[in-house]
Length: 67
Image (cartoon, rainbow, N blue to C red; front, side):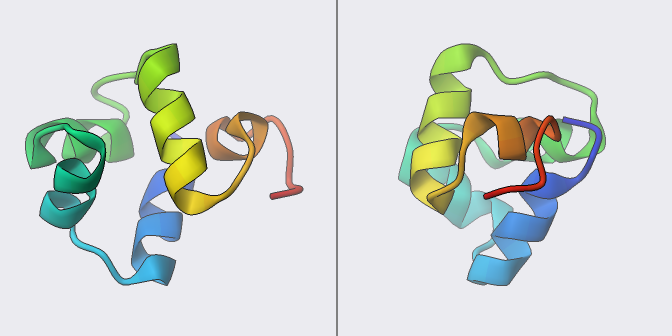
């Protein structure tokens, strides 16, 4: 997720990496690596993130500009 959509969405919602991680059951280190492109989330994590931010997976990974 090198397109920084995750970081953008997280900041728009006003949550920290720690808070987001706690909400979806991940460490803040994982969230940080997703945001920097050091780690790619699996499909289960993508579903959790998309649901949490109320966006499509396509939007989250940069395939679509429609939320």
